[in-house]
Amino acid sequence: MKKLLNCLYITRQETYLHKERETVVIKQGDDKLGQFPALTIGNILCFGQVSVSPFLMGYCGEQGIGLSFYTEYGKFLARVQGKQTGNVLLRRAQYRWADDDEKSTSVARLIVAAKIANSRSILMRELRNHGVNTSLQKAVDKLAISLRRVQHAQSVEESMGIEGDAASTYFSVFNELIRGAGFVFSGRVRRPPTDPVNALLSFVYSLITHECASALQGVGLDPYVGFLHKDRPGRVSLALDLLEEFRTSWADRFVLTLINRRQIQESDFVTEASGAVRLSDDERKKVLTAYQERKQAELKHPYLDEMVPIGLLPHCQAMLLARHIRGDTEYYPPYLVK
Image 1 (cartoon, rainbow, N blue to C red):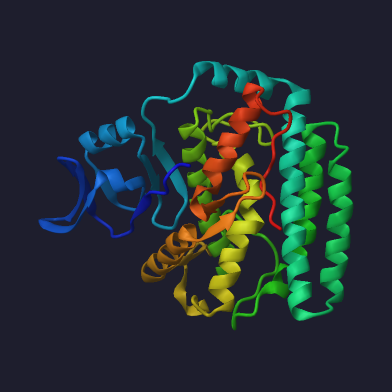
Image 2 (image 1 turned 180 degrees about the vertical axis):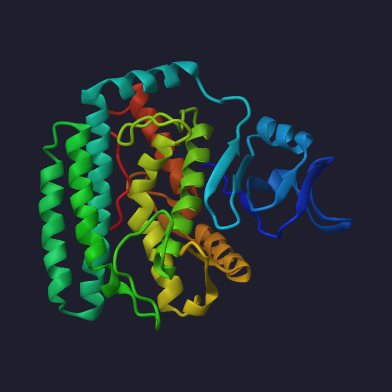
């Protein structure tokens, strides 16, 4: 099994990263802030005004170290990509599948079914832990209907429609899961997020999307060509497909943990003049630290039947998807929580 490497998050503004022998050096002006062995790093994520030397960019590309750039507020900007790994025949097969409505639907249907099942599992866990809740029970029942419907979806568009209905049902009761004082969720708002809960969700979704894109590239797949999300310039469509399996089971549960354990407070957010809400600089670091710790936790993969760190789940699913596209397995086994 692949080894889980560290992620380096650069959040301090006006910093500069460069390569020194086999290490990554972080500087601000003439001050050296840190120096890390490159062999221990799997990804470097730069937020805001962060500069990277061309030599370090090239080194990251050669060594397969993911290098991504985000705005200071966590909006994805770009990824530096080196030589494509994997067999070109795998990518050619992926492109043919993406152009084949029947094959695309077969994968899209499974991904959507996993997302709905995982959403339903979170709500059912809440019912088990906190007793009867009429609105939650109704949502669980509606998601069961959506789960049955998607099994018979005849197109990607139909699968997406069912996914949209299920997401609406799930988020209609999401506020019932929040126990942190001062936090209220009245609906999913994306661009830009206008409340602390949406800001946290969008930030964590962006982090996991990066993990998925790196994992897909690592097994030789093209993260820009998806089955559920159609092609759009600059969009990592296949990474977004993979993200659907982890939205509720990983991202949402992580966000709820931060809020319900009072690790994050409402005062930790800043509202911009545009109305956009974001984490303050110090609290973003706190969230990234907790996220990195969460990635180290191990669980048993339901299909592989072995213990893996949460941070390697995207790699596991990317590997299973590649096997399916190559024809090694009859079906793609999406990630399901128990």
